[in-house]
Length: 253
Image (cartoon, rainbow, N blue to C red):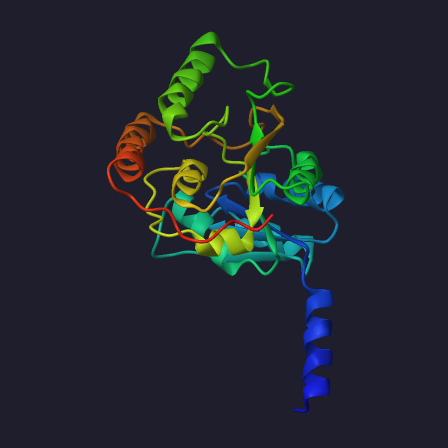
């Protein structure tokens, strides 16, 4: 292949590549997938959606096929389990220069993605969709106990990052920064906090979101997951304050 032809092929591939890869970890969320994908593509028409499913056997594959969209990819894992590892797997499959991670239960509003991308273009290198930054709101169905539990868990993570909602699972970053992140070994489901501590992120930011309660399916939060969160925090404290190393090299603005 001549140099000129190779260059043309490269330009064509680049023009066809998605602008944003949206990674969605799933386990028994088939009922939410059609609405989620529709709303993502309404917010970001040129996004690819990467669904990483932990072998739900609930019709997730049928739901994806029914969409008949080339921009939706389904990866079914049969040997691994867990939201955090699913996110990492999906990020490694991403083709776009920007990666967005969000939950499948419709608690995270896809309509906030353009604002997150704008923050990245303005100089941020990691953007959280936040419930607790000014303008962020919670679903009215949240009880006082649930709010207090969330705020307490957030307070425990505050020494690790200055962001107001490090528990959020809705975030955006550049693929080059994800690829520069080392030592990822999360426990449970708080992958954003893991990346903030171990990644090359020096200018994180937040955008306000309305955090909606799920309408379909069952919550995966359990006492077991809360215990895992405490173990995860202990690991991250040791990493950050007792000799852990951050990846070298500046994040690209």
